[in-house]
Length: 126
Image 1: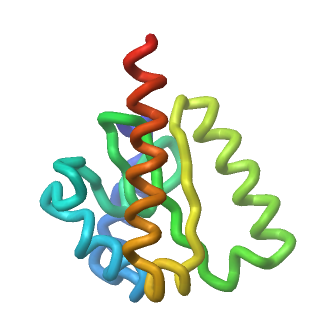
Image 2: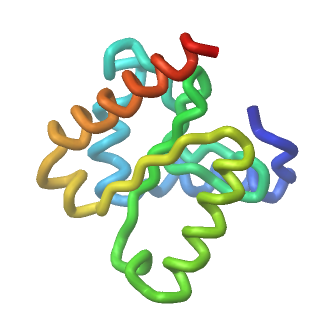
């Protein structure tokens, strides 16, 4: 579940859980306690050398929220490498911009559920 995440990654994830961004707080309020169709999500979940904003282990599904920094060229390259590493671990990722999460929360939730439905089909065909 954690793919050999080091203790430092666990420590940092705990810190991040204690100071969610406004967009993370909005989405967490809708995901926590299995509120989204009974799906269990973890927030700031350590995997390998990364911390995923939100993670549903049942479907190996991660939700990443992007602020302004993710528009910078260097960060775009790091995000691409990160996604490739996570894909190699079998993790599916969906990304949303922070402002979209805050202003279009219901649309974000609908897109998450749509992706989960696709993953359910993939999991049932294995």
